[in-house]
Image 1 (cartoon, rainbow, N blue to C red):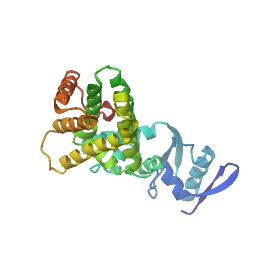
Image 2 (tube, one colour):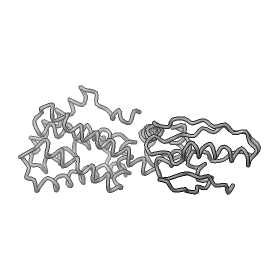
Image 3 (tube, rainbow, N blue to C red):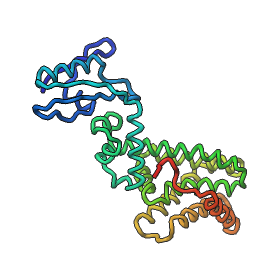
Length: 284
């Protein structure tokens, strides 16, 4: 099919190949000799690439040229992007990032490949959005933990540990964040959280020129230990490794081993008492 449909963009006439049109609206193929009922989904984030006039013309072309009885419905797709993200989150949390395919996300979201690729160019772009959203949740959490009015070292340790339960300790979501660390923007966003955490809990106790180096060091400790865990080179429980990261982080800040034991014990008790598990954002 080499037919063209017309659309008007900012007063100019534009030609659009019908193959591209069908891909965008999620129609991959029309079987020979079969009638079809076509439902066009308008994305809710970006403006539609085609007008209602274009859709009517498209249906008319298909009806006339293919000799098919094609009816058209227009359905609001305002939440389609969010539905795709929700499906991806659940699959990533259940199966891990590497073990989840784009096709599985499409099936879980009950959408089409064309619709998914309208919103996201590839699987990594979905990962990027999910991780940015969750890292932003962790950023807001810093203030909430600070408002509990614990001593600085306890608040700092608790805030780190709550985040680590999802990002480092859970076997599948930790894969998600491990993959995300290769995306510079996500890595920098996470690093900024480390800086903010140090400023929030320790205020004037740390010199401003030391904040960035401490944040980089703490990020490096966590990444290194849990990379070793994923490669099977460390056999300790993930919760023990999280506390090891917290231990070394507090030592970098200037606390002694004896001063660190108490906050770690209090954080463990708080986690158990409040039944803190993987963040509901991933809704397993």
